[in-house]
Amino acid sequence: DEYGAGGTATAGLYRPGNRWTVEGSVVAPVGRSGLLSFYGWHYRRVAGDSSRTPVANDERLTAGGVTWATPIRAGVDLDLSMDARTGRMGLAPGRLVGAQLGLGIALGRRLALQPSVRYDLGSLDPVPGRLDIRGYGMSVFIRSR
Image (cartoon, rainbow, N blue to C red; front, side):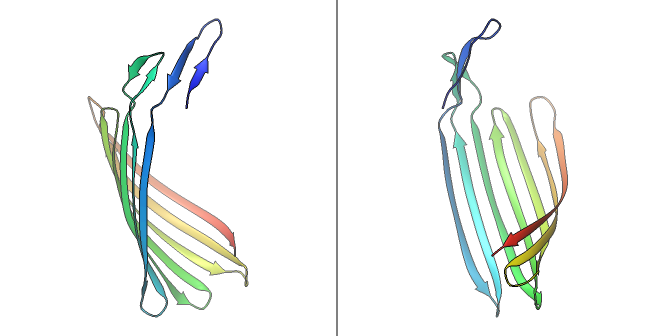
């Protein structure tokens, strides 16, 4: 994994560093027709180099979450999820927690409309200072089965 640039103004080579990812999940039935999912993952990238000069671009990110899905009436499912992430990018640690509320609305035997809303809250702590993070999101998907 290398990037090289050449020309009159720029010459160099950038290698971002090796990466590893570990992930896992468990899904269990709850009640008559609900599902409870737990998941987690960890991502690690070691420091790279630029034209044989070390670059402090190492990363460690860890996340975990839980999702509960259950039908609320014929053709309509409710999905609730919460997750948390923590990480360090170079010298800057950060953290983020979020929650999401979604619906699955059947549009026939093979199609479903899936609207959702999400809120995230966290911070990134570079040296010096602290950056607060707030996120709001909405999405709508059409899923074919």
